Length: 236
Image (cartoon, rainbow, N blue to C red; front, side, top):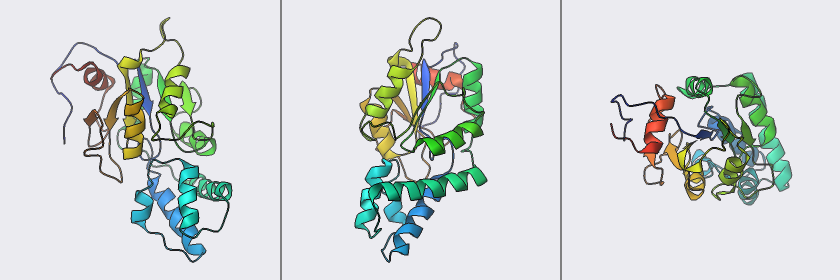
């Protein structure tokens, strides 16, 4: 797996960093998988971890439609609300940050890099995660899956986020210098389709061949300058 350039370089920063949430900043994917399995099996249907992994990164309503076909005898919105309530409760009870995520977000904020959250999850879970990273204001923009736009892998969530980022130092962030950080193949497809340099950091699914511009084993030890060098194409 590719690694970060390690040689020192002049200070380069991304114009903005757009983070996926589940599996990228917080280790909530096991909560979703558990909730899906319990729901489908409660109706006598069959649902496995492998089935759940195939939907990682997808919009909640898209996932709910699949769960209906697997046997969950509820409406799409009922399924979404059920799963969301379970995952929100588990995350509020115990939020597990992905390695290096808390430190990287704090370092980017300290350097004045605009930050965004771009998630297929809905606002109730995003609010819990934002609180776990320092509360409202840590992320300049939060795009959740309940805003009415097409879900990942469509580029719309990232395009919407880029358009909403505020001016920084008197200028709007240049999309050519933005970095998206994703853990799913669906998310990588969304970010790259929006034309944003995408760093893949796998969690529960491999990202080899998914189309990310760069792959990292984790965010541990990653700095704002590292991301700046990557998007700028500065060699080690």
